[in-house]
Length: 159
Image (cartoon, rainbow, N blue to C red; front, top):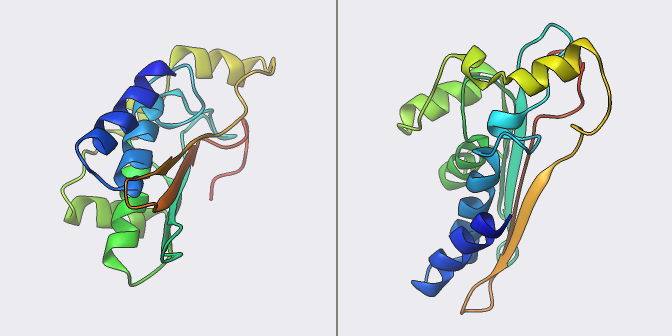
């Protein structure tokens, strides 16, 4: 958790914006297999990973979100790209992954996001992997932003 705080604070210390600080904090959590987001996501009913993420700015109320995304290690960056494009607020599934490709975001085979812990939990549910990660930041201009990412409920249907 301290690494996520440090990542967000580093952006703010360099006079970065609240949105980027919140996104960078969540990226750290998505990269940590101990959290139900990104690499640590729970598995769907058929044993895959589908993730959701969203961002929102407090000053303009602009938002961007993605749902049912597979093969994108950091769906929070993809939600940020949806916001940046400004055409839609929410993209789901393959259209969202196509946007990730257009923006040059890292992609991976979906199975690379399946951890042994998630597989064990999926085959013998025991609680403890549910949840969502998130961050809220306020920058030097007083702008506030929030970012959240999740693998969703274990055993959920795809989509």
